[in-house]
Length: 329
Image (cartoon, rainbow, N blue to C red):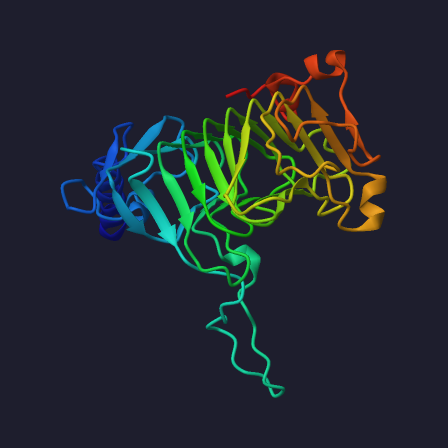
């Protein structure tokens, strides 16, 4: 009996400690490199967030450079990571695909295992209902291979007034049937720097091409009606760039639409690149009401299409994001 009473007391004590956890509440957590916040690293603030929260929790990150490789795990929801200043609150890392993996020794043939594209991320978001605001995510690796800045896997992710900096494969939207919304963001890169199978809406974003190459590489599944939609976005390029494709189909059925966008003269007249000949049979590459020197459609590839006004009016965020429910950020 005495042993049972001690066990009950111990459980009560544990519950009491958990209830008294000062971080387990809707308040804002403050991160600052100078030590004036509750945490010096963003990873530490993420670590104390309770799993599957029903309330909205903000991690406020003060200006500074945070060299961290971050994962927001699948069991975290309703988290907002908000920077103090978009251009001066920077999360940065420098992995690229050709770095040798530490866990793999040399083989008998002298080969080594490289980490590959999908482990190069600076920030990986596995959780759903996560928001980023006013912050920069950077992969500052040299141009030695694919180097992801943002890797997403969660659903209902929102990015507001953020910057995503890198070279090849800057933003990887890595999970089919997940929904992402980018609003007033800046995304730069060289090759395929927005790629993957997710459904993503880019509203009023600046897309900056740093080299002659391809902006998008969608891999939208056949049974998903929408992939990448760029609305009221501006495409710009570095001074030495003169040959840019809007995209190329990484997989069959890739979906990409540019509508109401500013397309510069550096966009090639054909607009889209076939990559794999078989992919053009199913690629869903669309345009509507674009402007600028690169918006002319008379020389576009035969397997792309211009939407009619009626078709374009039906493509709204409500319709695009109605995959599982009525989420509309």
